[in-house]
Length: 166
Image (cartoon, one colour):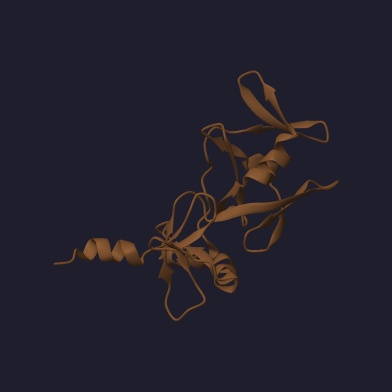
């Protein structure tokens, strides 16, 4: 007799803490599939993540964050970050936080999603981080931006605001 719960877990799509996609125990390696997944990440009003772009939503498990910063460019206006979905946005320096003092995070997509700096981008950002007493700050253009110890609250995704107001 098979356990339906174990079968469901074996079929589950998940995104790991390092930004790798899996289907059950098997890594998803097809580059276009990975791009499709990264570009179609959404979150419902209950906070569950799903892939849009199909006839029905495909729910998946996120071990840490749904987005990852894969590239940073320091400019006169701030830090331009490239996410794993290939979008580029200006980093909101007031949304930085750490987890276990070895991972750096921020909020992206207009405050709707969390993103994690991968090791290489974390190391780049570390060049602008200083210790200020027991806390850490990011220094940009002679201004200090505190790095929080916990994640800020996220905004409800735009596509679900109508569902909540009903």
